[in-house]
Length: 292
Length: 273
Image (cartoon, rainbow over all chains, first blue to last red; front, side):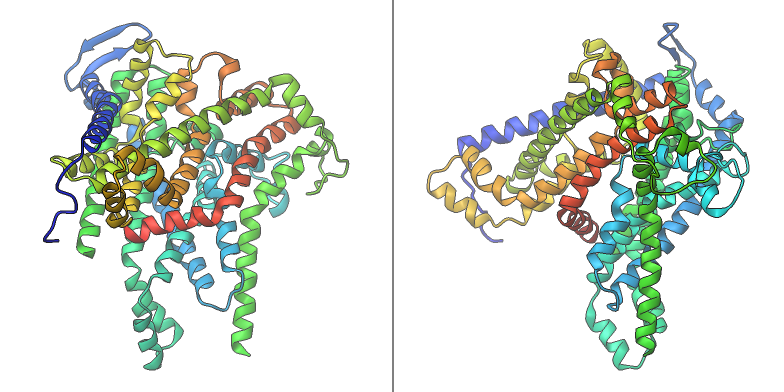
């Protein structure tokens, strides 16, 4: 610490550093900062590339967003969707990871690999698989369960169906995260509990669970951020229908921007979501800050 | 005794969850080898009663599906190699060089990961039109060349490599290009590996961006092709199953081969972060 590792910078170091830093700055400026600026300015305009309009509107787009019934419907849907999926993701992930962790199970890494499989498969393809599985005529779900439900066409079941599929796709991520968390727990605390004669449940409830709290928060926050941005499963499976029962926040942006070409309105909407995401990101920083 | 019963129950539950996890894939692949009459039949079996590969042949003849597959493979591999390289070199500079503004730059890289896709996609789309890159793979590859996630992870990874080795090479007269390509790159192999797998999967499944910037059908990628195919042949279920199976299988193969490195990669980043 008292001596700099190499105070004399060579010529090649300066050149390499400059090339890399300049390339990075140019790239992120062109493909990130400038687009954010354009979107921000655009969100105050009536902006439609098809009709070629670009007129200043002031706050009109934002007012329209907050007075739109569809926006609030989609926010409610996103809330229901996120809460249900996250609860299942966390509980299933924790339960399964703990079951694998608690040493009586053989083939730990095999189980982990199997549960993680849906996480890596492309969402478009997986959404199609489930769309076929939900099909009332040839789908395997009605066949297996002996039901007669038109899952994706019934306003009562459509969002549920998409949620089930998302839980199936994503719970493996929580399993892997919790397993990583469990295997990095301090063993002395667990040993001490055993010596003191704590039951398995007591150990789990009063030692393991509190120690896993940072991981739980990490899983919850990354999930919130990713579900605010979820749209592919909606696009493939329901296109927001029946009615508006499966409109999620990000799906409206897709719909407004690239189906209706209301770029200005879609930009305003995306900034609203940006702020919501930023709030949760800030929360995640606060949470990881308290950990240290 | 009690422990044994517990163990059996636990294993049975885990196996059941495993079956539910795998079942959709198995059903999909089995269905893709069935004839349409069997798929639509009232009496359903998991395994095809009459095994046929016609679905795969039909799907490709009607829609040139293998072309999409090859396009996706080309674009995905190009992006993966570029991102692996840029992430490593940026990670090297950010972790091993000391210079003014380094922390600012790194904070900025971190911030890029928090931006939702929806904020930048409209302006990026209009910019690509102005650059004249529409309908070319430049539009897919160039805006994906650097990855905040990749740089962040490689910076963390390379920071753990010992400075002494780099110092020794410098004393021996090696220049920085040599040090990066011959020393850092091989030593950061595991980190590069997990970044590459992540990037491969993300690029392979990306739907919206190729859908927006590629107009010629022959140039289109697999995820978009799959949706177009479903729109056009929505009644030929056998071919739909085959097409879906084709777009899932390569990813599963890559995952199953590399799953150890892959899972170690995500787990490590979570425990550290």
